[in-house]
Image (cartoon, rainbow, N blue to C red; front, side, top):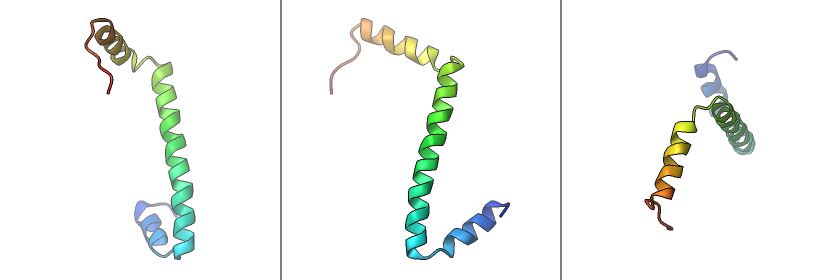
Length: 66
């Protein structure tokens, strides 16, 4: 299985039980992938500007409780 089209075909042929298992697996896989990318972005300093802006807004009273 080497292409998106092949994966789509395989997924569309899953039984209901297999599809539920695949959804659970994919949700965990997707979350772990996102967490890894976020951690890499933090380590690389890619979010520093946003963090600095948020801290500045907080200190200047531009934040409110929801």
